[in-house]
Image 1 (tube, one colour):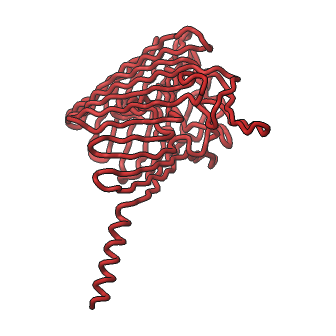
Image 2 (tube, rainbow, N blue to C red; image 1 turned 120 degrees about the vertical axis):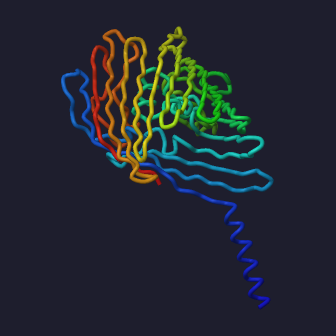
Length: 376
């Protein structure tokens, strides 16, 4: 009897220890068939659409309870392309590769590649969004800086509905801590049906073709190794230019309806050391939920170009949703902001997603499609 009690006690200790440390595999897949407008606006062509609503990913999350309210975490996340089985040429875990310490009272400090808080904020502003809305808009306006490398990111705890994020992406340049660096931040107030969100970023330019001290690449570059000196350097492959972006928006839910509006300002240079060119845009959205149905529409306007999106989603389960989508991008003949009617998963490995996909001035392009999303 005593041996049985000892065995049961030992099993309880092992079970408790196991419960304190977990690793989770997760992901989502989104694929569909779309009628997509050609560059010249002459007619639509039928294509396979990959990741129009949600990016296709697979990832790993780890959590360890350290006691006293402190936890250690890690996250790795990779692209999946359902049209060809590829990933992304920018790196296997270009989306997430980080480790963090978190406390309910003090917040979380994360080290490594992770989301830019500007992009995270923008994606939350519209009631019914997804890549076909947020990615298409941010790319056209010019602030699609989705992930920050060499990053230290701090997430504040939630205090009376307020929460914030502060992020620094280091330059990895011993000669200039500024060149190629990123500073990004966000602030949110969520209280019942009301959400107010603000975010911004300041990206510093870095010249192309310059050797940078240090073993790790910055925002752009490739590692090289000098066998005679044993020194590792980074040579910038392409120039990155100065950029400042701000996003401000609010969302309000009334019963089954959600209303939202956002303002975007993006200033960016187009050449190294060049003048900053400012582009602004507005976005409004409406969502409606009834039973398993989620219906939504949004309209983005920049200069004299517009992007209209209409969606219908049906929840077959908590994880699986058929989606119908219509997008219309009307671009002015002299537009510097040019929208695409939808957006697809990113990357070019091992083959491009769609040949001839380009936003064109003076043309109205449309996209109409049916897809399925599944998360696990």
